[in-house]
Image 1 (spheres, rainbow, N blue to C red):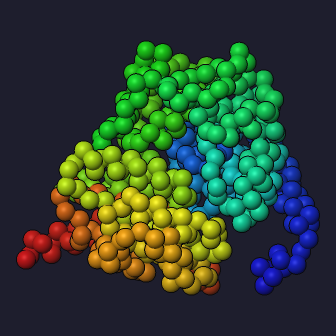
Image 2: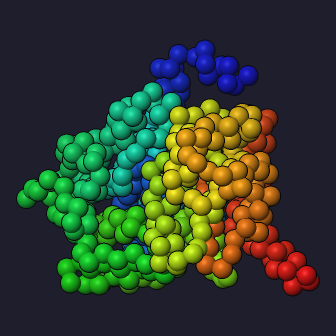
Image 3: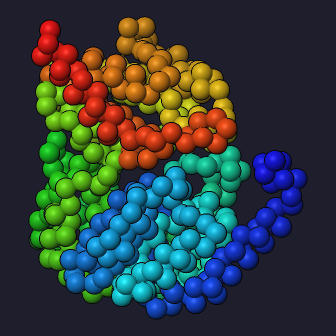
Length: 437
């Protein structure tokens, strides 16, 4: 019934409804953002990781900080899991969290800002001081009716923030975000991938001597070496974004280094759940760009461990979301994975078999032997199969959900879920079986 009403209601009325919610919520909670410095992070990938990194940097610097991301809601030392399955909650919940942060004495608040949140005015009546752009690649294309409109939604956020802008200079969309005026601008990049952007108005932070290994990532800024537990080139970009935020707030580089090097994991983001005798990695990657980056990183590990295989478990979200990307995800998996297991992700009311069929259509042009391609709808069984196939030095990579606490199925039902917990349970069962046989 609600879905039918949404379809027949004029768009301007729906937009006005969301705008009213945003305004009335700000009034009800007495505009809490005016009492803090608020940092908004937008982009297709990396938002949660950058948010957590900034949180750690500001806390390391001695500031009480709140952080609201797709992973968790943190207010200084207290946190709760984000169970909304929504990065940027609506209906005043963000204002409620900001009021709690003010009451807890927080100096800073960090908010992931999504394109859907922007469409629904969830960013309105929040006084953002800093806007961060991580990267941009196609996502929510059907919702926005095109990539340009998706980018424009992100641009509305930058247009609304007047004080500090921080941008990824190595992203091809950087010029679009640089056009918006701000009192101070920072740009970050990796040496050797310089964009043509050079401006006296832009303070540039550049990482040199970048290394990504199986157990760490490292780089140098202004002769200061950083060595992170977090893996992948993309996490170096995330670190640079967070460092820029720190510097913009007067936090020195040494403090940024100390905070970043203390981070062991970001939940569900390139998280190594099992280390021996093979590796099992859980990652949230659910867009083609993110999946490609994760696979390429793990492929580098494979090259260094001759004879190892990459076993990939993946699916695609249902509910009519970004159907275009399903065959693209399949194509990427076929290019990089030795064995592919297609499975449920969050089918919602769509036919799960149809979703897998659309992913498989992207694999069909590759010569993948039937023995290396599996379709197992039950996600637990799919993970179990992947673990049973893995041998010493192999890497099992499970993508799409990360640390999400639910699986969304038909009729609005949510099944409690955690890829990481399922991996541990099935791995322990496998060990017991092998010990008894």
